[in-house]
Image (cartoon, rainbow, N blue to C red; front, side, top):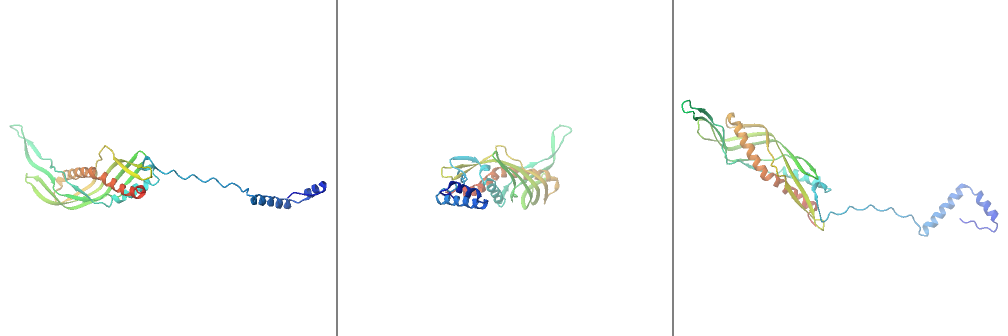
Amino acid sequence: MVCISRVRVRCAKGMASANVPSLIMWAAAILVLGAWSGQAAEPPTPQKSPVALSNTTIPLAEHPQGRQMMATAARQASLVDIRVQFLDKTYKKDVYVREPVTGKKARVSCRRFRGVSGFTMRIDEPQFTLTTKGLTISENISRISAQGIKVKWQLGPCVENTAGIGVSMSDVTFVYKARPMLTFDGNGICRLTFNQASDNFRVKIGGFNITGVQNDLDKLIKDAFRESMNVTLNGMYGQLISDELMKVTVDVCGRG
């Protein structure tokens, strides 16, 4: 409030004698008048919104939902049946002796195995590490069981037998590596590129038990199973993971 008086001394005295609450009230009134005059305080500066991904290529790990996308794909892959077919190969470890006269080796016993049919398996939901350098999947399949697998074998006499066997495997492990990338066009629509590492992974089998043939053939049978799984998984595991990740990618950012 402005003090208006014809007598300056009296006005000054009035101001000096005003108590503190009165001064606060006058100050508040001045602020209100300032608000009425349009001199309000400036609003806070808004946060910048994140820049949309467009015309760029990034590792999957750099996408805000990259890890969640990979987890969904891995979970879906564990629901797919994988058909493993035996290699066209006879595994053998025949027994030979050397003839005392000629010194030549002579076969005295056969030990051979050949898988004819195949079997179906599923993978467990894997553990994985996703970084800007790439994807590493550590698979540990707790158990694989199959029955009625058609095989041919020889043990002792070199006579081929045909039978149906059962198998139970535990702690089947392998490591798979790839580099998933996302490429965004000008509209922010993405496309997945999935490059598998050049080095092929190797399947390792922990526990192994068969029924239907003699245990003398265990080593040969285990080799046959391991090699057939190596070839099958090398050929299709990466495609399986890629296909499932592609489906997730389309849902997240592959549509306009």
